[in-house]
Amino acid sequence: MMLPFQKKALEEAKARWAKALAKNEKDKTASAYGALSFDGFYDRDSTSAHSFFVAKPADQNTPMPLVIDIHGGLWRDGSKETNRRFALYLASLGFDVFCPDFPQAADTDLIGMIKEILKAISYARDNAHRLSLSFDDVFLMGNSSGAQLALALSVIFLSPALRKEFGFAVPKVAFKALVLNHPVVFFDSIPTSDMEDFKDIKALRYCLFGKDKGSKKAFYNPEGYSSLISYGYPPVRIISSAGDPFQDQAKTLYALLMNGGAKVEGDFNGDVTLGHDYNVKDVDSLDATTTNNGIALFLEGHIDKSTIV
Image (cartoon, one colour):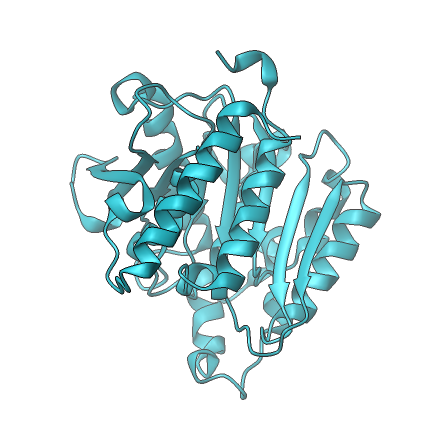
């Protein structure tokens, strides 16, 4: 059952959405989503690699349940901008969204990416009042390669051993639930020939893991830390589609988490015309709004009702 504020936000968002579609606005602004966003930096160098944006419902003066969204992009050429409209749509449904950029494979390895994302989350946590964010109800989300990073982060927050081994400094944050959107998480089974973007997968693996991936095997394949899943792991929603060349990875991950004792939901769309990250790339489509409304309802089900005023 939806909370009153969520139901109202969803109804108002649908009304705004219908009005915007009726005007055939292809370059929809934040106002069309009933949300707004603002940008900032989480490091003193103030570079785009250390930037972030926050998306919020336009008519809310108080903090809402918070989604930390990790963008994809093959670990090498992604940007928070690819997720801005997706974040604005979630914000129109009654959520705050924090989406950071971080150095990519040309500038750091996988461990470096994780450390920078942790730095961004720590900045948001330390500056929550100034950013008008609340960390009472926090959700972690990632799409494509960002889902791999989100999955790794979710385990790092629960594993003192991993934090000690790699020197991860984590802020005081408890994730209520996790959304893995079209996850690409098994490095040993990424296609090398049928996708143009992955023709140089060997070079990418080297950038992320170095010559010897042995010390980082926990991040090379989720099976490396599946034994940690049962220790207070948050509920998970995994999203994929029949047109996604990585759907097998999503289904394998679903089974892995389920067998590990996690509470997992799967949203596996059977439409072969829906490709990788369709609900992020084409937020305006009916299929995307249906999927993204499902994400919102999943998150709403894990909000601590006692924190709602």
